[in-house]
Structures are given as structure tokens and as C-alpha cells.
Length: 239
Image (cartoon, rainbow, N blue to C red; front, side, top):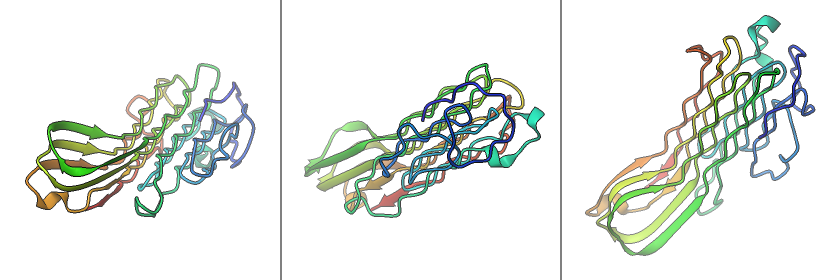
């Protein structure tokens, strides 16, 4: 979701609001997030941070997105201004090939909020033998840092591996992205993106050495203060 326009109105606690009073909602399976603003999430897309200078909520995948950080301290610390994390997608990979939800945008108090980050995509690989070495990844993106409310990390993507056997040595990743830091003391950092989903039935029983990673993304901080922001939840492995 996009960062908001500039506003110094305190303690806006609306799920849906305007581009002035709330950061943009992250893209989601709902398909209706474009051009919408405010703390409420839409499906696996994170909600935007509300005025004044709150952080966006993390995008989700198999794991839920983390909450954004609360509004600027001079307004009284209303936790209701934080962007809500996206909702986890509780469906197996071959039922719903879900893309990671986008992170919610941060609120701009005049010094610059940052947008939420994109979610991971979908990867499907199929064959007889998975060989070689390296990294297969569909991670959520990390959000940019901000001077005001920061955007949130994107949810991890979905990876489906269908092979009879493997000699592959490396990592397979569908991690959530990290929330942005807020450079100004007392403003809201972004929440972390939820971990994605990896479906790799039977590969652990063959000769390859594979490390699977579906961790949620870390939340940001405002000069080492999380301000109520939260990391994304871990995703899911289907092995």
C-alpha cells in the first residue's frame, strides 16, 4: 500500500478512511485494495497506518502479518491507529496458489512516510530429479525506512516442488519481509510480513540436503523502540 498524504490530525481509528488520514492497504487476494486507505486489512493484505504517523500492518500468506507501530507519541499513543496485519491463508498450496499479501503503507506526518512492500510470488517446479545447488526463493520484500510512519513487509509467496527425487543442496525460502524503521523518535514502524507456504511432498526422504525457511519477517523500530509493532507469524511447510 502507498504511504499517505500529509496530515497532523491525531488518533484516527477508522478501518477505512482517506489518503490524507490513512496509509494505503496492501494488495491482497480480495482484489479490492487498490486506492483504499486505513488501518483495516483486506484478506491477506495489510492495513495502512492511520494519522498520525502510525506504521502499516504486514502482508500475510500462510502466516499472519504483524501489527504496525502506534501513532506519534505527542498524540497520546492510541493503539487503534496501527495498521492491522493481513489475515493468514489457511488453504493448502494446490487448493489456493496464493501470492503473498502486500504490506500496508505508513502515515505521513509531513516528514515522509514509506509505502508497504510487495508480497512474494508463486513458483511451481516439476520434474523427475531436482538437482544442483543454490537457492529457490519467493520472499516478501522488505519495506523502506521512513521519517514518519513506516510501511510494512510483504507476505511470503508460495513454492510448489513436485519431483520423484532430489540431489539438490541449498535453501528453499518463502519468508515474510521486514517492516520499515521509523527514523523519528515516537513514530510508528512497520509490521513484519507473514511467512509463506512451501509444498514439497517427499523430498526430505531423498538424497538432497535442503533447508526450508518460512519464517515471518521482523517488525521495524523507531530508534530501537518497536512502538507496538509486531513480527509476522511463521508460514507453513507441506512435506
